Length: 190
Image (tube, rainbow, N blue to C red; front, top):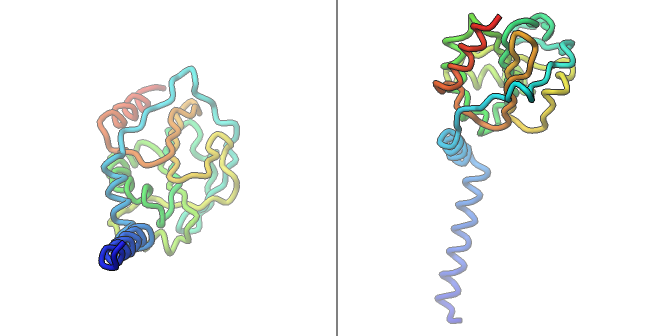
């Protein structure tokens, strides 16, 4: 192999490695990952009625950004939308705008719990930067076993009868017409 061809090949390899490092380890990479997640985020589907489970435990303790302690028990009998997320998670960031739109329209009708392991300071800085006003919580105890996931984002929907009607791991379009219809249907049920 002649020297010019080898040098060109080496330079191409270095450029490819630099490009991949930029995508994987820089803010630009996060932006690209967020945009790709938004493109491929579809409307979530609910669990069929025969496969739904009742929550086994409502003793889950949380704290909000103002220092107020709450328990899942406080919301029993209501529709509860729970999202586990973090500021460093591109799929979480990707789905936040659709959640904000959903929250803006349903905040008085259902309970929203956006649970993070980030500090409240870091979460609030992120929310302000992204023009979001979602209610953020941190977990003080283990969530019910039906909501056990080592992956985020993880989102769960509990109906008024305490059934887990949706369990979605990964980004989704929460502001879709089909998901809104599902929420409206759940709100009409006793």
